[in-house]
Image 1 (cartoon, rainbow, N blue to C red):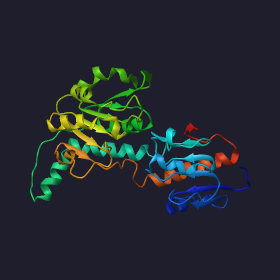
Image 2 (tube, rainbow, N blue to C red):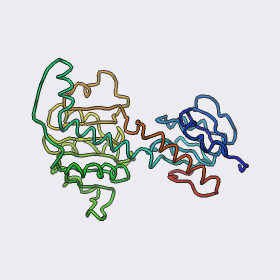
Image 3 (cartoon, rainbow, N blue to C red):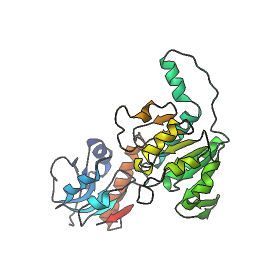
Length: 308
């Protein structure tokens, strides 16, 4: 496995170009997982962005030191990754961009931007009074790096933010409530943001009971994974008009053309683009460069989440 130069496979030319500064010390090869593996030994393999975990089966027979994802979530990877590989997620890459989108979804929903866009499309001047983001009670469910990035952007809007994590703890801002506190917390909030990883325990976390506890007129924002929410329950509660939805993720995904969620005026949907911004490439390049540096020095890579 050891050689004088590291070998790294990257899924597209943009990332290769972003890593030119290390090209003198690393052999960079382009591999998008469509063609057969280009080498039997590849020190670092970067997986195509937003690809199915099933594509990882192509690594069977390839010797690697690290398989690097371009996503933070890694649901389904453990079952698909062939034995003998170390897998790292892309923590530090998407938090900024995902937090930006969460704030954009909240502001657009609170200030009625979709209504104004629809009116303008019909050539109508349609002023209307809407809720502010200022002074709202906001609940963040999932207080990892993304949740913390969202919080730091919410506070300047003069919101009152409450945090929920897996287990209760305290920090410099006070209590971070445990997820078992949700039934008591949900009825009090104007905006509920869900940013939890998809696990067996969080699948359909947002169900009929969850939505029934939310206050009338409140906004649910899901920037985690589609399967965290029960789509039928979302549809029932949004169709009634009792709550509003802002969804960057859906189940199924992509949401089929003509799905009834698309037609509801109180539902704002973006097509899983939380990380899809100009912020991604430079951060992915920095993470990949750091991983290569660690492999060269014999250090443990960052963000390792699975060792098969």
